[in-house]
Length: 149
Ligand SMILES: C[S@@+](CC[C@H](N)C(=O)[O-])C[C@H]1O[C@@H](n2cnc3c(N)ncnc32)[C@H](O)[C@@H]1O
Image (cartoon, rainbow, N blue to C red; front, side, top):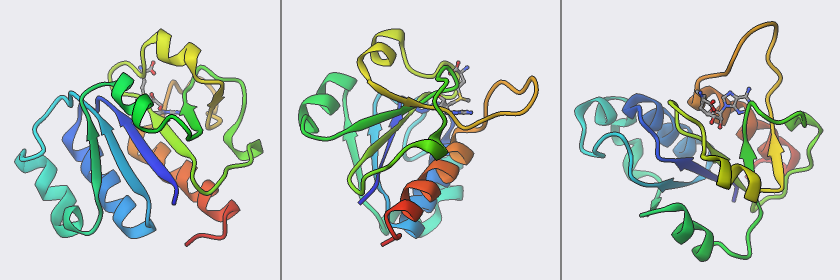
């Protein structure tokens, strides 16, 4: 199963859209807290709808706990600061795809720690994609390479 990891997400509607995507595409979701909102937030619930009950969300109090619990797994960071493109990368079926927070990505120490860092190509002067769009693009490629479910 492909794993989607959100680092301290700030925007409830984005996280909710990823919850729904994960339920539909059989992705396992992980959230590194604290989030910038409560999971009972009405904005979150309105977008997540009943999809919240279809999948499991594993929550961690911080990045160190996430690392310790998944020590044998490969984590890939999605970042606009990489020169390596996601569509040239060979994904494995149990990979963990890490996405940064909407306001600030991930801190430098986490960036340096993760060997595999990938970017979705952007045209012209565009700075970044919405995080939920990025999850959708990269998860599709990882699933396609691993024959979906
Ligand atoms: C809105 S962006 C964060 C922008 C933030 N100002 C920064 O400097 O990282 C939220 C997250 O979406 C992902 N993301 C957005 N666009 C991306 C791209 N073109 N390639 C890879 N990841 C991207 C990254 O994980 C990023 O941390």
